[in-house]
Amino acid sequence: MLTLNFTKMKKLFTLLSLFVLIGMSANVFAQTFDQTTTINSTRPYYVNSSDGSAEDLPGHTGSTYQWSVYDYQSDFLTVSSLTAAAGTDYSFGAGSDETFKAQITWLAAGNYVVEVVETSSNSCTTTRRFSVQIIELDLLVQTYDHETTPNLLDADFTTCNTNSGDIWGTDNAEDLNDESLNTMKFTYKVSLYTKKAGTASDEIMDSFTSASWKFAVSNASNTKPTTTEANITWAIPTQTGVTGSIDANGDGNITATGVSEVTIEVTVQNVADAPDENYVLDFDIEPSSVVVDLNGDSDFSEGTEPTGFDGTDGSHTNSAFQITVNPIPNTNNIKSN
Image (cartoon, rainbow, N blue to C red; front, side, top):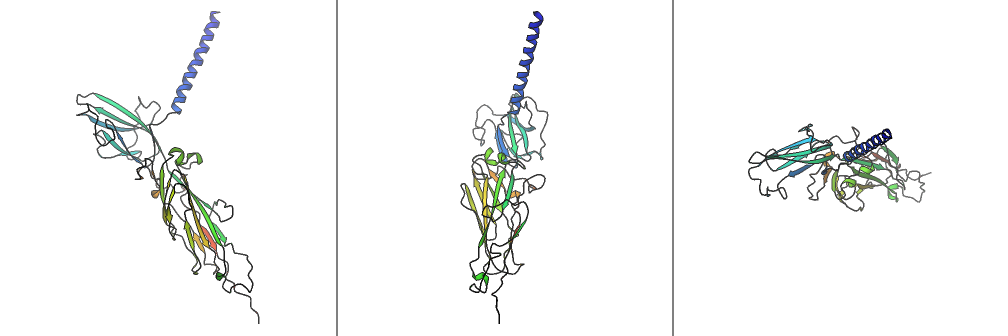
């Protein structure tokens, strides 16, 4: 009987130990960071101050401060053996080693711990730590064709204009550009993600529901036929939270607030012309122009898409696929003698 009770107690102890381990593991994996912000953001950190502008908490006259940054570890309050790399993971602003406040620019995605050690005038010390999660910004540009139900393109696209194959008689104009030719509308969707090569669940609005972000559209390859009737119209259709404009050359600046996706449309006027007189539609968005505002102060200093996030190294593409629209031939009326 004694052996049986001991066995039961041993099993109970084993189960309790397992539950404790599971609970500890769950706590580690469910860690909530004190702050989540984006790569290339510059953020202030301070102690003994109500707003960071002045050391206004009494009792700290004569104190000195030492700021440090560590790689995040599960037991971050007691372990500090892994120092983050200054100049690679982060950089300090001026005066961060000796004042009650520090300014840190985050240079690499990852999990970190900000530490400050206050040494009082009588040489006693207190250490405070603050956990920070840094996530990446990664823009995605998607290009759609001109069909009634647009299809997502996965490569450069060449097509005839939508009047190709139409039948014209002698009652029609000699110059087909004098007829009512159709227009073609192409669509682009620009999405901002908070994880490199992320999925829909990683869109920025899942992490920062009220954030604003903006970007610049640059269209160096925008061309059109030389015929007078040829025309390209870029537009940003009405969308909640989206403002900005794109000019006739396809260049512009767009800001989005509280949404992760922006739609851009371009309409071309069909023309009849020589085979080499075509429309070419294309644009790029430089990573350096993709910036975010996370705290509502409109200075957009809380993050920038990393240089090189342009479709290489596993990132999404910042460029639209090139669309080429060929005109119909300007065939004149049939004549006979």
